Image 1 (cartoon, helix red, strand yellow):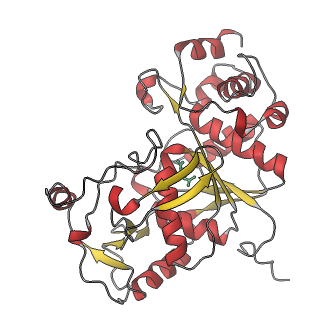
Image 2 (cartoon, protein in one colour):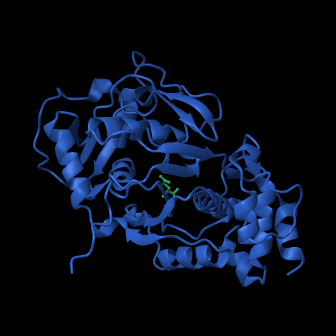
Image 3 (cartoon, helix red, strand yellow):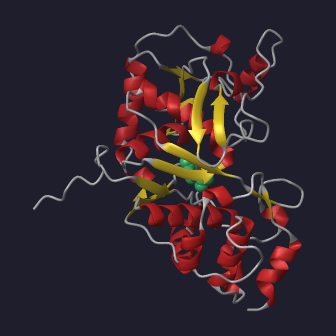
Length: 339
Ligand code: GLU
């Protein structure tokens, strides 16, 4: 018997995804995003796909995939499909870049970072200020992306996608992209002014995050994307790719405020060891971690242990305080205080 096609984009059932990158262990910020995504999906009847975003191969850490799954299970998060490993099947990503190239919307680009930075700082270029409201993360694209000015773009026209060992860029149309975000509110971004022509295929012979995200969300029938608000500007880029590839309407978006350290910077190693696995190894119960995440999110009024089921019932996007959550040393001490 042939297995049914799993990734029908026309699937009538709403779906979301958990999309960890196996580049490091899940910290409390990642855990919060995944718990909220899971809780909304279970409340609203969305199918959940676990997708492992391992395309950033130089940064992929051995064992991180297994650790992410183990941590999610420990927290009580479950899913309906996957894990789907991105690097195992890139034929659809290749087809998408080929399509963009044939339609004259993508072109090869061998310029170095220094050459692009030099051109982008030329005085005749637009300032490149993010268009979204302050704090929307528009300027915080992953990997500190630099703006690629349209002045560096070659003449556009239909091309064959004939060189997988060079970067290919999308000819970003210069217009605002607006969407209603369930958590972050009304958004308008103009990717042509913030990042310019962004990479859709990398010289490592792999799709970029932006392209892979769109192709996979479409194939996997994803209708709802819940993730950190550092990706708000990416949502605008992804919307442009949905249009360019004629994939129909993009998913609905819900971008959550990030968890930050006391210095206001996104949670990272300098804030100490905030890996969920560290608390687990120290004997902290999952209910304590979940309780802290719930308090941060406005789902309960103080720090108190909470089960995954209670979190699922209490989760409301409207309760999430606007602005970033700050992880403090008191949070750390509370987690470790009563094991
Ligand atoms: N893999 C990304 C991350 O771990 C998430 C990307 C997305 O949700 O679109 O931050």
